[in-house]
Length: 255
Image 1 (tube, rainbow, N blue to C red):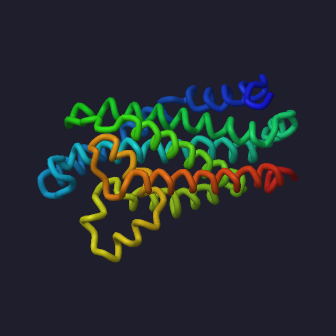
Image 2 (cartoon, rainbow, N blue to C red):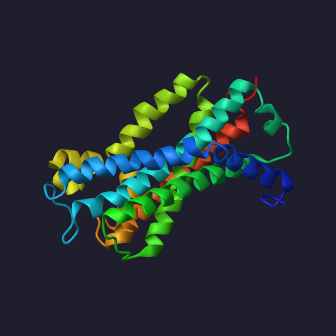
Image 3 (tube, helix red, strand yellow):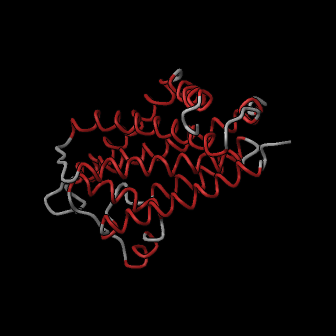
């Protein structure tokens, strides 16, 4: 049965073990990077940037850094796994199995979500020593964290399928993922921007993931969380459809 077969469980285990065996690189390093962001931006901008009412800048920054870590590491896991498998030639051993396209897709995305959530939790545990955080709506925190990790895991899978060389994958990440993440309100509230840039920010789907996630902590957001949820869910559905189509067609997977 789909999602209960030994092959599906084995692929999830293999993809999870792949990043866990190099945890210093895949987990500890991103946590350290987020800590540096917090120390630098929190120190420089605390008291100089106005965000939500009764929320200081460091407290505002922490959920953004947590979500940024979740997104970037979810993308990195599925994209790096696929490109490595394609270049080394061992992807054929996955394609030859009786696993369905849905199972292959789900296994890669689930493993990516695990890495993203683990790193996000690590960032949260380390950074909460620096500011007080409330939990106004914990369910929203969980929902947006899971949806965000799933979206970036799916984007990583698409990027891994599309890329044939590491520099192509690096270009995808450096020119698409990183700008969309940094311009999604991680370090600022979009209400502090000029009107034209506020309008541009509303075109960025990453903004809704981070804004909805932050709402779960403070009960305040730049956009109604229900609107953010609808946009994020729709974005995930579109990306999942595209990823499944690519896997089914064998695009750049079968030679």
